[in-house]
Amino acid sequence: MAQIGFIGLGNMGLPMARNLLKAGHDITGFDVVAAAQEAARSDGIAVVAAPTDMLGGVDTVVTMLPAGEHVRSVYLGDEGLLAKAAPGTLFLDCSTIDVATSREVHAEAVDKGHAMIDAPVSGGVAGAEGGTLTFMVGGPKEAFARAKPLLEIMGRNIVHAGGAGNGQAAKICNNMILGISMIAISEAFALGQKLGLDPKVFFDISSAASGSCWAMLNHNPVPGIVETSAANRNYQPGFAAAMMHKDLKLSQAAASHAGAATPLGAEAAALYTLFVNAGNGNLDYSAIIKMIGGSAAN
Image (cartoon, rainbow, N blue to C red; front, side):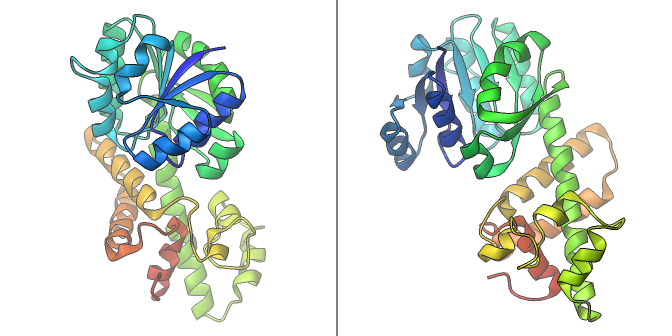
């Protein structure tokens, strides 16, 4: 049984922590939100007042935090996790953050004598609850080998993408594809309807032709076509538009840093900026078809 600290007990983190608890591991948690603390306590997770309060009794720490600034504040500095933890502690950062911050934190972890991986996830709340997440992992092979048994409790697909920060790189590149794809799907279905095509007929054609893709088959933005689509639930996420917006902004920051041209990624980021700034960030990312098709999203 591992002694695990879990920081970030929100919509994704808490079900991930629950799965580790169900597997027989001892979990100590932290979250800044009182409701998340209470929910964790009701599941049998011991909640501490500050992240570093858990370090005396754990050998592994998992973090699931909103952004790079939060990861930096928790990990770095004289009062951060890396400075306070016992040498050899294993850190799993499952947050989705910018590659540069991830690599900076990795370097500090190595300097302090710790093992660390970045392991952002795909699969949403349903995947977190069902233990079926995909983990895209960056970091040394030795750290990956230590972390893998725990990742296998929380996920179904565990892929080592290479060195430090490569998990983040894989996540943002993948979600750039997803965001671009959803815009293309939305444009095609909106155009088809204006041309008199029945959306279900068009789906039957395109899903078996060259236009087929994962987002169309699983997250189709038109209601009544795909059972798993958020469109059938009035676009309740799912994968929120605000999260897609975040990931697309991360992809563009990475592209700028690397000197890479991503014109479609940039356009997708701009369109999701418009959509989210119009008050639609809490809707599923597929709801962007409403803006593209010219109708109100809510």
